[in-house]
Image (tube, rainbow, N blue to C red; front, side, top):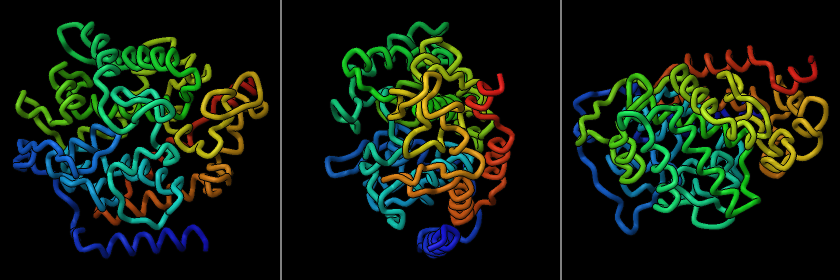
Amino acid sequence: MKFQAWALLLFISLASADELARKTPQFNFKDKRFKQYKAPGPNDSRSPCPGLNTLANHGFLPHDGRNVNIVQLIIGAFVGLGVDPGISAVVGAIGYASSHNIFKLGFDLEDLRNHLFLIEHDCSFTREDAAIGNNNVFDPKLWKIVLNELKKSKGSKVTPSSMGRAKSARIEDALKRNPRTVYGPRAAAFGAIEVGLVMSALGPLGSAPLSYVRSFFEEERMPTHLGWKPRPLGVNIVTSLAWGVVSLASDPHLIKHAGGVILGTPGDILGPLFSIGKPSGFGKHEGGGGGKQMGGGKQGGFGKLFGGGKLFGGGKHGRGRTREDVMSIARALVEAAGFNSTSVDAIEAMLDDWTPPGETLAAN
C-alpha cells in the first residue's frame, strides 16, 4: 500500500472518531480543568513524559490514560498547555512511522515507555534508562541530581541554560552507572525540544520559578496553585526551538555527548529527529558506527537521511519512510484534530533550508 493511501485511511479513521469536534478546538483561559488536579490511581496508565501525565492528571487527556490516540494528544496539549498543534503532530508522526503497528489508533500512555517507539530516549530528567531500570516511573534519586543543579539558578528562576546544565549532570550520572547509555544527536534533539516545550509553557520569557518546574516534574501538576497562568500558543515552534538551542549551548559536555555535533540552529534540532532506524551513524552514539567524525561515510550518513532519502533506514523499525512521508502523516493528524497545517508547513520549510552537519564538514 502506498504511504499516501494509508495516511488517507488514517486521516479518515481519526476524523470519524466520535470524540473529535468538527470545529477548531479553542483555548479557554477559564477552563476549570486548569485548577482541577487529581493524582493517578493504581489502575491508571501513565507515560515517561511528565507533560502528558500532567494533561491526564488535569483531565485534558482521559484520566485513566487508556485508549488514547494521537489526535487526542494534539488537542489536549493545545487546550491544556498551549502547545502549537504542528509540534505535537510532527512528533506524533515520527512515533507512528517508527512503531510496529502503525494502524493502532488507541494506546495506553504506558505504551510510550517502549524503547523501540523511537521518541523515547535515555538520560531523562526523571526516569531511569530502559536498559538498567524502570523508564516509566518518577525516580527521586535521578531528579535530585537535576534539582541540585537547578537550585543554582539566580533568584530561584529556572532558565533554558540551567535546564541544559542539569541535563549534562544527568548524562554524566547515567554514563557512570551505565556506560552503554544511548545519548546522541537524536536524543539531544528530543531533549532540547522537551526543554523548549517546558520552558515555553511555564514562563512567557523562557524562564520560570523553580516552584513551577518542581510542580510540573515532581507532581506532574500544572502550577496554577502557585500563580501560573496558561497562555494560548505560548509553546510555538519558534520559541521552543530557540530555548532548545540555548539549552544545548549551556554546557560543552552536551556537544561531546551528542557525538561532537553542534546542534546550534533550529534546523540542527529538527533534522536528527528524522534519523530513525539506524540513527545517522554517530559512532557508538545511538547505535551508529563507521567514520571518525560522525560515522557512516564522509557525511555521517546525513546525505541519505535528508532530502528525500529513506529517513528510517528501511530496517526493522524504520519501515523505509521518507521525510515527505512523515510530514504527510503530520498534516493528516493536525487536520484530523481540527487545525490547519500552517505550522507543519513552517517546520518543513525549516528542514528544507537546513544544511546537515555532515555536508558542512565535507564542504570544509
